[in-house]
Image (cartoon, rainbow, N blue to C red; front, side, top):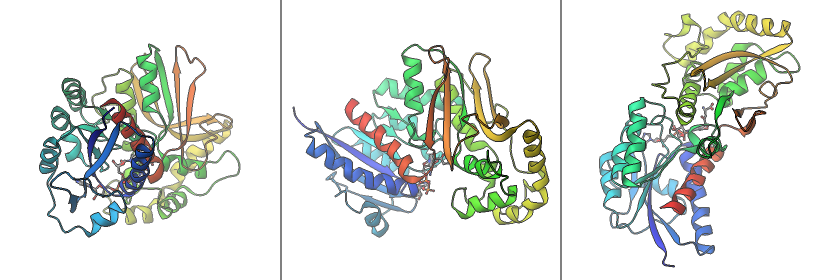
Length: 366
Ligand code: NHO
C-alpha cells in the first residue's frame, strides 16, 4: 500500500508541548520501523513569540525541535497565517494545540471546516459556550476532519475515550464523580490525610506552590474553575447540554476577603489569617470519622452538576488517593459497581502522552 503523508503543525511549546515534541520523535521512528502506511511530517512548530516552519512543506527534522524553535529567526506567523498555511498543504493536515489559548480555541470550527484535524489538551474550546461546542462537532462532521482532546480531562488517563465508548456502545451513564484536579488532590491528601493530622491549610498551599503543583497564582486552582471546565466537558459527552462552566454551582476555596488582593504572593501572605475556616471543616468531618476532599460530580438523570468540598469515609477510594493523582468513577447501567480510572492527573509527560495517543488515532482514521 502507498504511504500517505500527513502534515502536522504544533503550536505551544511549554511543559506539555516540549514533552510532546520529544514523544513525536519516538512516534515517527516507530511508524517508520513498523512500515506504517502513514508518514508524519512536521511542517511548523510555534509558541507565542516564535515560529519555526517549512514554507515549501518539506519536513522539519524531528530532533531538538524545541531548541530549534527557541533559536528560530523566521518571522512569527499569526494564527490565521498558520491556518492558511496548513489548509494549503499538499496532503491532509493536523493542528496540535498545546496552548491554553482561548483565541486558538475559538478558531476550531474554522480550522475543522477547512478539513484540518485537531488534537489538543486545551480545555478552553470544549468548556466554553455550548454554541462553540456544537459548532466544533458540526464543523468536523461536515468536513470529515477529526477532533480529539483526551488530555483535556485527567491528563493522559483514558477518561474521555472511556466515556465515549460507554455512550456509543449504548450503556447509560447515570453518575460520574471524582477528583479532577492534580493540585486539589495534592492539597487535600496533605491537609486532611487518612492517617496523621496534616499541616495548616495555608502552609500546604504554599508548599504546593513551591513544588510547582499550582498555577503561578494559586487562586487559579482554588477557585474551582479548572475542575468546572473538566466537568462541563464530561457532562456534555454524557449528553447534558451544559451552557458553560459557570452555569452550575462551583465552590471557590478563596476567602471572600482575598478575592481581590492584587497578587498571588500577597494572597499567600494573607491566607494564614483564614486558616480557621478550613480547619473547622476538617474537624467537622473528623467528628464523623471522615475526611474532606474537593470533588466534582454529575448526576446525569437529575441533570445536576456540581463542584466543591464533600466528606468521605476514610476507606473510600476518593479519600485514599495519593500525591496529585486523579480518580474518576463512572456508574452506569452496566457498571452498577462503578468503573474507576485512577492515576497521575497532571504533569507534562502524562498529559503529552494523551496528546500523542490521540495523534495515533487520528493518523489511523484519516
Ligand atoms: P504552558 O507551559 O503555559 O505552555 C503554553 C505554551 O503555549 C507556551 O509555549 C506559550 O508560548 C504557547 N502559546 C500560548 N498562546 C499561544 C498562541 N496563541 N500561539 C502559539 N503559542 C501560544 O502550558 P502547559 O502546562 O504546557 O499546558 C498546555 C495545555 O495543556 C494547556 O491547555 C493546559 O490546560 C493543558 N493541560 C495541561 C496539564 C498539565 O498537567 N500541565 C493538564 C491538562 C491539560 O491534566 C493536567 C491538568 O489539568 C493540570 C491541572 N493544573 C491540575 O489538574 O491541577
